Length: 345
Image (cartoon, rainbow, N blue to C red; front, side, top):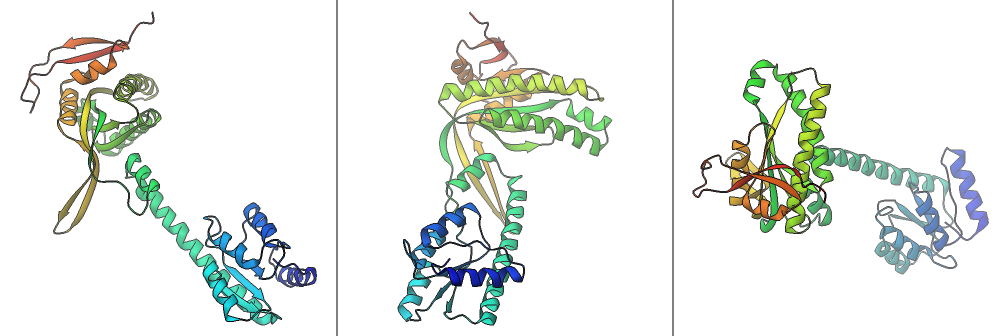
């Protein structure tokens, strides 16, 4: 980036002759536009230019996420300490005093590019690690970290949620009939489809076991997330039937329990002598009741607690069921089976 055409032409000839691809700009404003349109690996920039000087342009480039790590080498005939300090404050990575010696120019370019490429490799490695570990982290956690990477809001707090527990019917028998790798592949295929449907409804799977999982719906008001949980549960039954028609094994069955209300949502930290373990989930009586409803639900059934039943209102057809006292629930709890969506009027 230089406002003197002869210098630009000379540098372009020198750099293209040894295999570099170049772009040129006559002032700082034009330089910003060129960098935004075609991100370079390195920027050579003069200080004194019309419209916008090089140091100002350098500060803007270093303030943008997409060009923050691009090395900027400032070339200037002004060798004063004040210009160097201004350049350092703007984020310049190196300085060259005009007239520039070709050997020094090439040495500094190669050094800056080596550092840039090393940083790029490390960032790609970190991104691969992040992407790998994100597979084991609930979507809610990823969103919280993306919103505030320095201090994500992971502490537990009370939130109104709808909890869905899903279990595979007859999993113990399946584990006896199928080889472990066959059963694992089968569960992965079904659960991957379930995950897509749950996330499409703004839900999130927070805990899994070999034969089931727990999903949390918390977006929107109380009625909205309860209705999304119910709609998703019915959709999971439908996609299970569709998958069963394509699979050669004995049809897989599922059953579910849903409950709604306040729960403690966030992270828990468990510190032992051999390390620290973090989990992110929703806990409390509302979660416990949803799990117990799933336990007593029969194949193909969706049982809902009283709070969820109230929130579903007249949007779904419900049937009251009696399964006796639920495990670890002190009081008798009224629960209903979802028959299906309400008939259109």
